[in-house]
Image (tube, rainbow, N blue to C red):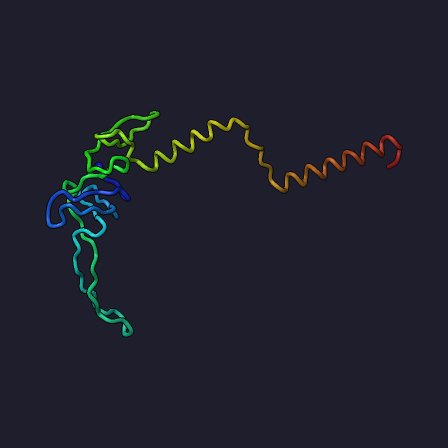
Length: 153
């Protein structure tokens, strides 16, 4: 399945043909997706408690994944999805313009590039207790060394 959650898709067939929306959920085993504002269904909810009232709820129903196409952010066109390997990672790519469709991967790669620019060594983290113990030992050593020099006990 080439469609993921939060992808912007275009419905290409059916009652909602031409409508665009964001993917809210995917069901890969069933080959279905739920798209925001598409395939609206009415469900009747019965009151379960004394202070509730019965109502009719409108929500999105699932449609087949073959009825949608991913819309590329860069070229703003519905496109087929190609797979490519970038920096050893398999990513989804727009067939028309070559733009990477995986938003999470784009963010991670930018973060890695920023980290590589910073070549500073990270500061060594120490626990507060161990820092206090080190200070106490340093004080004891200085007291012992001064008492050894002066001859005091």
